[in-house]
Image (cartoon, rainbow, N blue to C red):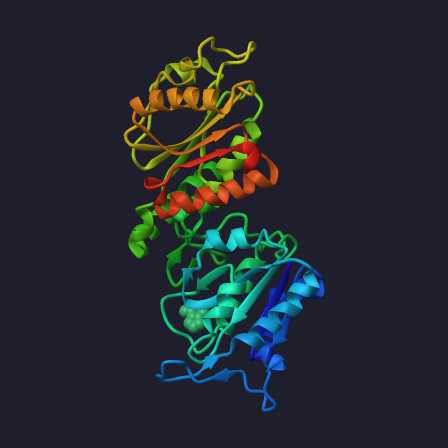
Length: 383
Ligand code: ADE
């Protein structure tokens, strides 16, 4: 991944990032961080890049032209319009989902402002995203750019070793990380929780989930408002099963799976509450080799209580857009009558890169609670 930082203080970026894990990743070629000094593009013989604000008031404003020229050198180099982030306290506050989504880019331009800010006209022309690293004001955007680069780099393949891997971590599931312990078994009279010494991974996972939950309740109860226990249900004899599980695993580390091919699962009462989330894959019509004759048999015993639902409907390729919409509305209203609320309705099974992007969109919807206002309607081909 290549970061391009437009700044008045390149040495700050260079000195701050060339150590530790990022330094190693740069040496190994997984990352590059190039700085462009905006001052080099000053149009003024004194190398000034700021001027008084129109309308008066305190402070200086960075001029549009030097910023634009600095940006253009990057644009010319990478030969396309890059995603360009302006670090500002007026932006969306950076979170883990945004970080992971940004890590999918090949190039990111980071624009750092100083003084009172940058002439708005150049921002309108080049900036694609306004991002803040928190609700406080820094003296410039460089520390924000460094924070963003550090957080995003962790998701660039090769940057972290296996042990450092970011596959599972704090804030996935909107839960804080459980406590960690290492040797000795007892320190200052405090013992490591017994379950961690058993080697029983099921029990250890259950303990960690509980400990994460308790820690979140104590330290960040606000996160729990949008934390869910995720279950995925699909007929494992049909294609798409592994993609549905990939999707669940992108959303949670504590997911449960129900196989609708099993009579026992279809017969038992499957109850879900408002703190559950169901990912359901159904065919429009059951396949000839499916264990049910009627699609409704798959979910006849599924009952929610305002339970958010991600509904993935496959098959029915022969249907027109209009026919598909009618049929899917039918399936949706059946499930709605059983107490489910749709977060997303997808035609076909998202795969590969589309699946990745879709999972980020979903995480954003779910973990911010935005799903209550806006349903995602998409076709897997378009994801
Ligand atoms: N520049 C100044 N304050 C900032 C903040 N909070 N986040 C990102 N960039 C900034």
